[in-house]
Length: 293
Figure 1 (cartoon, rainbow, N blue to C red):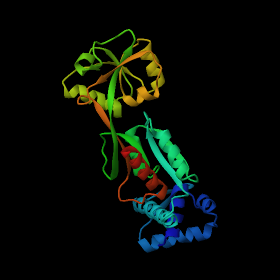
Figure 2: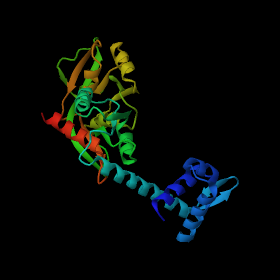
Figure 3: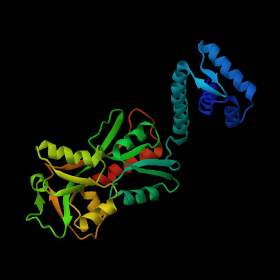
Figure 4: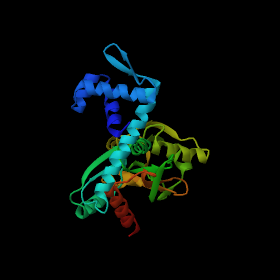
């Protein structure tokens, strides 16, 4: 088998018809059918079986498809690396951004564009755990996430640790600028995330660590709406510092929660032991330089 046959096989599996696969590959049907037959003879296994008008992939075929995807991907990465060695001027930067984002990111991207004006961008926003999946699946090369998370197979560059703040409407005014979780637990809390996800988990874990029972009355992942609800005294909330920096001007009180009680680390991740495009390498180098300056 060669890489061309693997690409043909991928098309057959994904299109489920020889005619559709041939059209996708811009070749005629007879040679494509012959390639499939040759592969099955070489491997001594049936790869697909006809079911009505469509093919169904056998267990052996599924195993080959998995490796075919991996091998064709490695071939594309090899081509890209050879073209980009010592370069990085052209290319595409693909990066995932946590839902709450990073305040300094626009400034960093401006600096990067000045250095590499021909680079294009694909920026996706999502929750941290899903961003890890996007990096593992090679949908994006880099992602900025909130920790802790399972980072198996991922490299991580720690960017900073971020404090959390307790926010209320102007109606409430706790005595001190800093507040404890024990003082917060009786307030009706609306958390800025969905149950089971990053910030929601971090907040609940902090209360649990101190054996406290917070009065959580809701959750709201739309941050603009959350700030409106807090301003109108619908409830109180706990938010990372990033939210306060990105959503200024609301009539609220913000009180810092002790960092040894509640804080979150933010990191830049990429897939370990895989080729990283020159554009991505240059971005990692720049963000390290910016954070260390």
